[in-house]
Image (cartoon, rainbow, N blue to C red; front, side):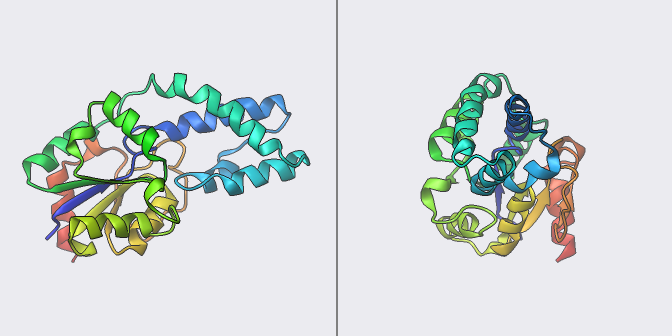
Length: 219
């Protein structure tokens, strides 16, 4: 029986991934470098090191990756502050609470970022356990974030379901032994997802109770 739901944040609760992609695309255009989703997607849901290295290889200028990252980071807050939670998120959290499920969050972002936006969205009080990049030695696709969540919840992995939007998140959740439902956003919908338990276009497509029934029927 599933006793806990574990949500990703960026791209899943708040579609920051699309904003990051658009900002990087805009900044890199100033350097005459065209950015595609295929080039950006490996960095979604994980650290930014490989993407920074890609930029420096393409522009043939060591250190430029950090400069560009800083330019993009300066643009992000104003744009992300305009976003609302993705469709169905609030309903899932309310339903999980009503069903008596444990609710947790596992994210590759840092705690300051997460706490700020959860408070702004008025979602912070739903989460019993939150694990961020500040709590682990390796972020997604490494399973450590999810392993730390289920350890604190004191439940076995098969009693939890993760909700993820990215390939790195999916790999982390499945690597830790959780069920995983993917809910891609416009930036991640084309990724080569496999080995997930269920895929939704939106959390509005199916109630949380129906998701849990579907997952439990597969066991």
